Length: 157
Image 1 (spheres, one colour):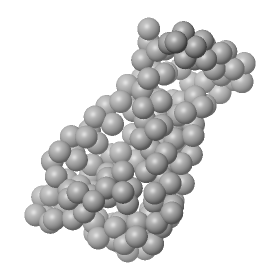
Image 2 (spheres, rainbow, N blue to C red; image 1 turned 90 degrees about the vertical axis):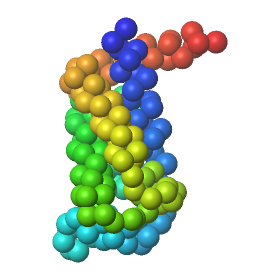
Image 3 (cartoon, rainbow, N blue to C red; image 1 turned 45 degrees about the vertical axis):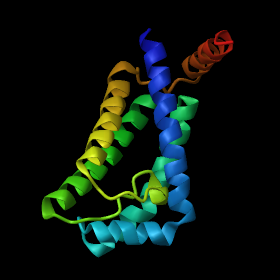
Image 4 (cartoon, rainbow, N blue to C red; image 1 turned 120 degrees about the vertical axis):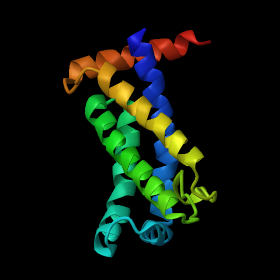
């Protein structure tokens, strides 16, 4: 049962972060500007963050979808989502109206407490995944998990 929950959470998070990462990578200059617009960290750090973040999201989404290093990945996703929540809350408290860029450049809505709640849900899912997932780096355990997941998918028919 716990393993099925972990499977659902990781697939959901993987499919959320994959298009977000790709959108940011394809529109890197727009994403750079978006991070600068939030004005939460200095300009130099913003550029580093906006350059590194899409690659971290891409790696995390691929790890989530394949089931590799799930505990570490869940921790990284928790940190990423926490950074989103902090940036949104700071700007809401400042009274600023910014494009959210939630879900990458594809998200054109403005920041809101709803975005904080959505990100809070993603954070909760990542924390749950971290808690219920064993630290799996051993290849034979990972392969056995993959076999189990494939049997889950084939039993859906």
